[in-house]
Length: 254
Image (cartoon, rainbow, N blue to C red):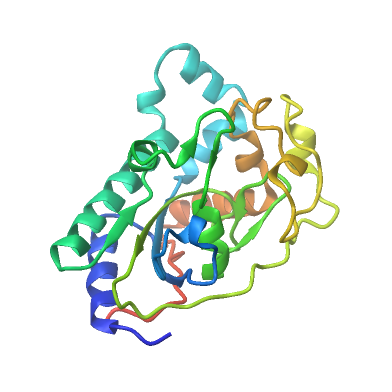
Protein backbone atom coordinates (compact mmCIF):
# COMPACT_ATOMS: atom_id res chain seq x y z
CA UNK A 1 0.00 0.00 0.00
CA UNK A 2 1.15 3.57 -0.66
CA UNK A 3 2.38 5.50 2.34
CA UNK A 4 5.20 7.38 3.99
CA UNK A 5 8.15 5.03 3.87
CA UNK A 6 10.32 7.40 5.87
CA UNK A 7 7.85 7.30 8.77
CA UNK A 8 7.89 3.50 8.61
CA UNK A 9 11.68 3.54 8.88
CA UNK A 10 11.69 5.93 11.83
CA UNK A 11 9.17 3.82 13.73
CA UNK A 12 10.91 0.56 12.92
CA UNK A 13 14.35 1.85 13.87
CA UNK A 14 13.10 3.10 17.24
CA UNK A 15 11.24 -0.12 18.03
CA UNK A 16 14.23 -2.27 17.09
CA UNK A 17 16.46 -0.11 19.26
CA UNK A 18 14.08 -0.76 22.16
CA UNK A 19 14.42 -4.53 21.75
CA UNK A 20 11.62 -5.65 19.43
CA UNK A 21 12.50 -8.47 17.06
CA UNK A 22 9.89 -7.94 14.39
CA UNK A 23 7.89 -4.98 13.11
CA UNK A 24 5.03 -5.02 10.60
CA UNK A 25 2.92 -2.24 9.13
CA UNK A 26 -0.51 -3.66 8.37
CA UNK A 27 -3.56 -2.53 6.42
CA UNK A 28 -6.55 -3.17 8.71
CA UNK A 29 -9.11 -1.19 6.71
CA UNK A 30 -10.88 -4.41 5.68
CA UNK A 31 -11.84 -5.18 9.27
CA UNK A 32 -15.15 -4.06 10.70
CA UNK A 33 -15.28 -0.57 12.20
CA UNK A 34 -15.94 -2.18 15.58
CA UNK A 35 -12.58 -3.93 15.30
CA UNK A 36 -10.40 -1.27 13.70
CA UNK A 37 -12.15 1.67 15.43
CA UNK A 38 -12.00 3.55 12.16
CA UNK A 39 -8.23 3.37 11.85
CA UNK A 40 -6.91 2.16 8.48
CA UNK A 41 -3.45 1.05 9.64
CA UNK A 42 -1.76 -0.81 12.46
CA UNK A 43 1.81 -1.20 13.65
CA UNK A 44 2.40 -4.71 14.96
CA UNK A 45 5.62 -5.53 16.79
CA UNK A 46 6.88 -8.05 19.27
CA UNK A 47 9.58 -9.76 21.24
CA UNK A 48 10.46 -13.42 21.55
CA UNK A 49 10.73 -15.45 24.72
CA UNK A 50 14.26 -16.57 25.48
CA UNK A 51 15.30 -20.19 24.81
CA UNK A 52 16.41 -20.49 28.45
CA UNK A 53 12.93 -19.56 29.65
CA UNK A 54 11.31 -22.00 27.23
CA UNK A 55 13.69 -24.72 28.38
CA UNK A 56 12.77 -24.10 32.04
CA UNK A 57 9.11 -24.77 31.30
CA UNK A 58 10.01 -27.74 29.09
CA UNK A 59 11.88 -29.29 32.01
CA UNK A 60 9.37 -28.31 34.70
CA UNK A 61 5.76 -28.24 33.52
CA UNK A 62 4.75 -26.74 36.89
CA UNK A 63 7.10 -23.77 36.50
CA UNK A 64 4.42 -21.15 35.90
CA UNK A 65 2.14 -22.62 38.56
CA UNK A 66 4.95 -22.36 41.12
CA UNK A 67 5.62 -18.75 40.11
CA UNK A 68 1.96 -17.91 40.79
CA UNK A 69 1.87 -19.82 44.07
CA UNK A 70 4.97 -17.95 45.27
CA UNK A 71 3.57 -14.61 44.07
CA UNK A 72 6.54 -14.17 41.76
CA UNK A 73 4.65 -13.31 38.58
CA UNK A 74 6.54 -10.02 38.32
CA UNK A 75 9.73 -12.04 37.79
CA UNK A 76 8.23 -14.19 35.04
CA UNK A 77 9.77 -13.50 31.64
CA UNK A 78 6.50 -13.76 29.75
CA UNK A 79 4.88 -11.28 32.12
CA UNK A 80 7.84 -8.92 31.73
CA UNK A 81 7.84 -9.04 27.93
CA UNK A 82 4.09 -8.42 27.85
CA UNK A 83 4.54 -5.32 29.99
CA UNK A 84 7.47 -4.11 27.90
CA UNK A 85 5.64 -4.41 24.57
CA UNK A 86 2.62 -2.68 26.14
CA UNK A 87 4.82 0.19 27.27
CA UNK A 88 6.39 0.51 23.83
CA UNK A 89 2.92 0.63 22.27
CA UNK A 90 1.87 3.45 24.60
CA UNK A 91 5.04 5.37 23.74
CA UNK A 92 4.56 4.84 20.01
CA UNK A 93 0.97 6.10 20.17
CA UNK A 94 2.21 9.23 21.98
CA UNK A 95 4.94 9.69 19.35
CA UNK A 96 2.41 9.58 16.52
CA UNK A 97 0.00 11.94 18.29
CA UNK A 98 2.79 14.45 18.84
CA UNK A 99 3.25 14.49 15.08
CA UNK A 100 -0.39 15.29 14.40
CA UNK A 101 -1.73 11.79 13.73
CA UNK A 102 -4.40 9.93 15.62
CA UNK A 103 -3.29 6.69 17.27
CA UNK A 104 -4.57 4.14 19.76
CA UNK A 105 -2.32 1.81 21.75
CA UNK A 106 -3.76 -1.64 22.31
CA UNK A 107 -1.86 -2.11 25.56
CA UNK A 108 -3.70 -3.97 28.31
CA UNK A 109 -4.00 -0.81 30.39
CA UNK A 110 -5.35 1.24 27.49
CA UNK A 111 -7.85 -1.42 26.41
CA UNK A 112 -9.19 -1.66 29.95
CA UNK A 113 -9.40 2.13 30.30
CA UNK A 114 -11.32 2.37 27.03
CA UNK A 115 -13.69 -0.44 28.02
CA UNK A 116 -12.49 -2.59 25.14
CA UNK A 117 -11.65 -5.67 27.16
CA UNK A 118 -14.57 -7.81 28.28
CA UNK A 119 -13.49 -9.13 31.69
CA UNK A 120 -16.39 -11.56 31.95
CA UNK A 121 -15.75 -13.15 28.56
CA UNK A 122 -11.96 -12.60 28.68
CA UNK A 123 -12.08 -11.15 25.20
CA UNK A 124 -10.85 -8.09 23.34
CA UNK A 125 -12.38 -6.79 20.12
CA UNK A 126 -9.18 -6.89 18.06
CA UNK A 127 -6.59 -9.45 19.27
CA UNK A 128 -2.97 -8.84 18.29
CA UNK A 129 -2.93 -12.27 16.62
CA UNK A 130 -5.66 -11.11 14.22
CA UNK A 131 -3.41 -8.28 13.05
CA UNK A 132 -0.48 -10.71 12.94
CA UNK A 133 -2.49 -12.92 10.60
CA UNK A 134 -3.08 -9.99 8.25
CA UNK A 135 0.65 -9.25 8.45
CA UNK A 136 1.44 -12.76 7.21
CA UNK A 137 3.36 -13.53 10.38
CA UNK A 138 1.84 -16.94 11.04
CA UNK A 139 -1.28 -19.06 11.57
CA UNK A 140 -3.61 -19.90 14.45
CA UNK A 141 -2.90 -23.27 16.04
CA UNK A 142 -5.17 -25.69 17.87
CA UNK A 143 -4.19 -23.92 21.09
CA UNK A 144 -5.75 -20.70 19.72
CA UNK A 145 -2.34 -19.00 19.72
CA UNK A 146 -0.37 -17.54 16.86
CA UNK A 147 2.22 -19.95 15.45
CA UNK A 148 5.06 -18.44 13.43
CA UNK A 149 7.56 -20.39 11.30
CA UNK A 150 10.43 -18.45 12.90
CA UNK A 151 9.55 -18.47 16.61
CA UNK A 152 6.71 -20.91 17.05
CA UNK A 153 4.33 -19.40 19.62
CA UNK A 154 7.13 -17.89 21.71
CA UNK A 155 6.16 -14.29 20.98
CA UNK A 156 4.81 -11.37 22.95
CA UNK A 157 3.12 -8.77 20.74
CA UNK A 158 1.31 -5.47 20.86
CA UNK A 159 -0.33 -3.22 18.29
CA UNK A 160 -0.95 0.46 17.69
CA UNK A 161 -3.84 1.54 15.49
CA UNK A 162 -3.34 4.77 13.58
CA UNK A 163 -4.35 7.00 10.70
CA UNK A 164 -0.69 7.86 10.01
CA UNK A 165 0.12 7.49 6.29
CA UNK A 166 2.22 4.35 6.60
CA UNK A 167 3.34 2.03 3.85
CA UNK A 168 1.38 -1.09 4.75
CA UNK A 169 0.77 -4.67 3.65
CA UNK A 170 -2.07 -7.14 3.97
CA UNK A 171 -2.22 -10.92 3.60
CA UNK A 172 -4.99 -13.46 3.61
CA UNK A 173 -5.04 -15.42 6.90
CA UNK A 174 -2.69 -18.40 6.61
CA UNK A 175 -4.01 -21.94 6.71
CA UNK A 176 -3.02 -23.81 9.90
CA UNK A 177 -0.13 -26.26 9.56
CA UNK A 178 -1.06 -28.38 12.59
CA UNK A 179 -2.55 -31.20 10.52
CA UNK A 180 -2.84 -34.29 12.78
CA UNK A 181 -0.62 -32.88 15.55
CA UNK A 182 -2.34 -32.89 18.97
CA UNK A 183 0.60 -32.21 21.25
CA UNK A 184 -0.87 -29.01 22.70
CA UNK A 185 -4.25 -30.70 23.22
CA UNK A 186 -2.85 -33.81 24.87
CA UNK A 187 -0.45 -31.92 27.14
CA UNK A 188 -3.17 -29.59 28.47
CA UNK A 189 -3.84 -30.82 32.01
CA UNK A 190 -6.66 -28.28 32.30
CA UNK A 191 -8.48 -30.00 29.41
CA UNK A 192 -9.11 -26.54 27.99
CA UNK A 193 -8.34 -27.30 24.34
CA UNK A 194 -10.91 -28.82 22.02
CA UNK A 195 -8.51 -30.20 19.41
CA UNK A 196 -10.20 -28.47 16.49
CA UNK A 197 -8.46 -26.85 13.54
CA UNK A 198 -8.89 -23.11 13.09
CA UNK A 199 -10.66 -21.65 10.06
CA UNK A 200 -11.56 -18.03 9.31
CA UNK A 201 -15.03 -18.33 10.81
CA UNK A 202 -14.07 -20.56 13.75
CA UNK A 203 -15.38 -19.27 17.07
CA UNK A 204 -12.87 -19.14 19.90
CA UNK A 205 -15.09 -21.43 21.97
CA UNK A 206 -14.52 -24.19 19.40
CA UNK A 207 -10.78 -24.05 20.07
CA UNK A 208 -10.37 -23.29 23.78
CA UNK A 209 -12.40 -23.00 26.96
CA UNK A 210 -10.85 -19.84 28.40
CA UNK A 211 -12.50 -20.48 31.76
CA UNK A 212 -10.68 -23.79 32.08
CA UNK A 213 -7.32 -22.42 30.97
CA UNK A 214 -4.88 -21.51 33.76
CA UNK A 215 -2.24 -19.99 31.42
CA UNK A 216 0.34 -22.62 32.32
CA UNK A 217 2.03 -21.97 28.92
CA UNK A 218 2.61 -25.68 28.27
CA UNK A 219 0.69 -25.57 24.99
CA UNK A 220 2.81 -22.59 23.92
CA UNK A 221 6.14 -24.16 24.87
CA UNK A 222 5.54 -27.73 23.68
CA UNK A 223 4.20 -26.75 20.28
CA UNK A 224 6.67 -28.40 17.83
CA UNK A 225 7.28 -25.04 16.14
CA UNK A 226 8.26 -23.47 19.49
CA UNK A 227 10.44 -26.46 20.36
CA UNK A 228 12.23 -26.14 17.03
CA UNK A 229 12.90 -22.46 17.67
CA UNK A 230 14.10 -23.17 21.22
CA UNK A 231 16.48 -25.96 20.17
CA UNK A 232 17.90 -23.91 17.29
CA UNK A 233 18.54 -20.98 19.60
CA UNK A 234 20.19 -23.15 22.27
CA UNK A 235 22.37 -24.79 19.62
CA UNK A 236 23.44 -21.40 18.30
CA UNK A 237 24.24 -20.24 21.83
CA UNK A 238 26.59 -23.18 22.26
CA UNK A 239 28.33 -22.60 18.93
CA UNK A 240 28.57 -18.85 19.44
CA UNK A 241 26.79 -18.13 16.16
CA UNK A 242 24.47 -15.15 16.14
CA UNK A 243 20.84 -16.38 16.05
CA UNK A 244 19.87 -14.28 13.04
CA UNK A 245 16.19 -15.02 13.58
CA UNK A 246 14.94 -11.54 12.77
CA UNK A 247 12.43 -11.63 9.96
CA UNK A 248 10.40 -8.73 8.59
CA UNK A 249 8.49 -8.80 5.36
CA UNK A 250 7.95 -5.06 5.32
CA UNK A 251 10.40 -2.56 3.83
CA UNK A 252 13.91 -2.69 5.24
CA UNK A 253 15.32 0.19 7.23
CA UNK A 254 17.48 2.42 5.08
